[in-house]
Image (cartoon, rainbow, N blue to C red):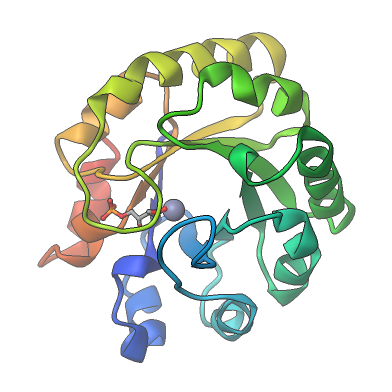
Length: 214
Ligand code: DX5
Ligand code: ZN
């Protein structure tokens, strides 16, 4: 089944608890962490993850857009993250492996993320260690951008490798997902869809979540 992970980047941060309750029909809560270095924006961090943990039973899917994420993965796990993903571009291969190991040592799910310009091959060293792989369909940093259909061949390639080498691994997409593009990413192999604007701008959020499942 296709899972939906609404991004709280599109929520009203002054009413975060209310806006997290509004997505109770979803599967994960997607939390975008940005440091102003890896991406040109700064969002939320460890104290916010800790505060939202008790307000939902949904798993917290923490997308780290920070330099050298290995420094912080344990702190995010301890704050209540259930899934932690780190960009392959943010550190060396050795440190990315170490980050995945640290997340697993905390009993949490771990994954890697690839930016649009990063080739599919970049996930190969980590594939067998991943519970989830996230393919960006926009340049990370901001919500509300246009979906990049040119990422679909990469999504298909990674889907093929997952099916061959680690079929339990989930394949997530993030950026520009709406009731039209959701169909494209599902056809190309994604099973977890992040959506910020498409969820929070909807008049009826539960029915929008249903619609995004394809
Ligand atoms: C972008 C973030 C996304 C963003 C998606 O860097 O990783 O999760 O919130 O927003 P939409 O769905 O509006 O493209
Ligand atoms: Zn994200």
